[in-house]
Image 1 (tube, rainbow, N blue to C red):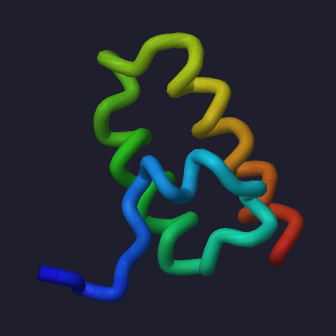
Image 2 (image 1 turned 90 degrees about the horizontal axis):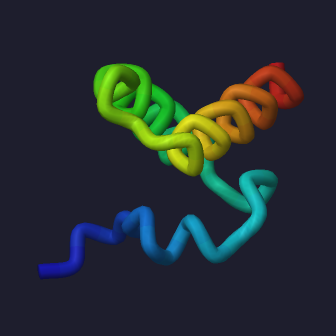
Image 3 (image 1 turned 30 degrees about the vertical axis):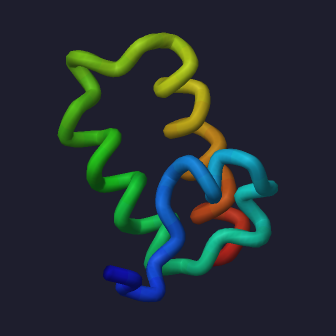
Length: 57
């Protein structure tokens, strides 16, 4: 079943600048909800996502 969405594995291999806005918002929300359980690598990814979102505003 292909929903047309790229999964996190695919996205993690590319620059955040190539992510679509909806992908940034989705994973920013998901990681923020899981923040108490996120390891340092996940926190770094969340910071990169936030930085990219801010650069697009």
